[in-house]
Amino acid sequence: MLTARDLSLAYGDRQILNGIDLDIAEGEVIGLGGPSSTGKTTLGRVLAGQLLPDHGEVLLEGTKVGPAATGHPARAQYAPQSSELAVDPRWPVRKVLANGMAPDPEVLAALGILDVWADRLPMQLSGGELARVSLARLFHPHLRLLICDEITSQLDAIEQDLLLRALVGLTGRRRIAVLLISHNSVLRSRFCRSSLALDRQDDR
Ligand SMILES: Nc1ncnc2c1ncn2[C@@H]1O[C@H](COP(=O)(O)OP(=O)(O)OP(=O)(O)O)[C@@H](O)[C@H]1O
Image (tube, rainbow, N blue to C red; front, side, top):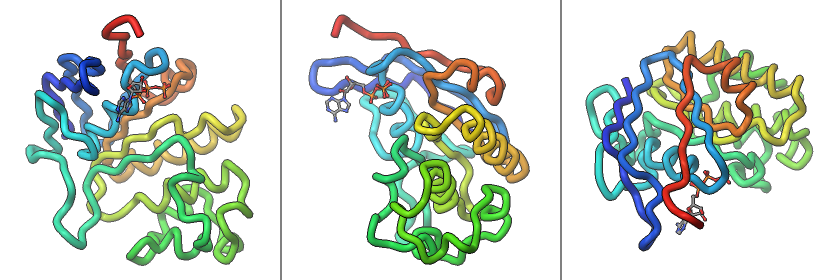
């Protein structure tokens, strides 16, 4: 499903990614760990088609990832660490979830999103509730790859476990490939079939 080959990327003269290969099958969850600043977010954005690598290619179901045709949501979506930055603070939950299309009731139910949140603003939700809303808005019928970048790092252990169990159940049923970026090796070993770890490319 996802095939990334020989990905390299530098910011200026600083090499961040160097010859990365990665495969994720449909419905599979693969972990990505490694120390801070080794390029996990950068790799996630390359896989989601939001950053172009200097070298190498990313194929999703045999075609290059990149911006979707106008008016269509991208097949690969990137969920950032901070849900507050991902949603417009002026929009009520109802509008955040609609995101241009009718919210999918199965996604709302699977992620535990409650009707009573609909008229609240993002700041009127807890961190865990907002993380659920922020994830739900990324789902659409053509979603094939979800990059989750430290999406539970602001939650306590119980909430982390609940959210990831709900997410992995949903993506498994829909055969969506997932890259779970996390510093937490316990979480990765619990939810991922295997993990890749990035190393530093130079002295920084
Ligand atoms: N657009 C950019 N221009 C220059 N340097 C950048 C840019 N984006 C990121 N970097 C640098 O590249 C390095 C890798 O950043 P990245 O966010 O990919 O690392 P990370 O492994 O996800 O880090 P963390 O675990 O701390 O979130 C960092 O040192 C960062 O400062």
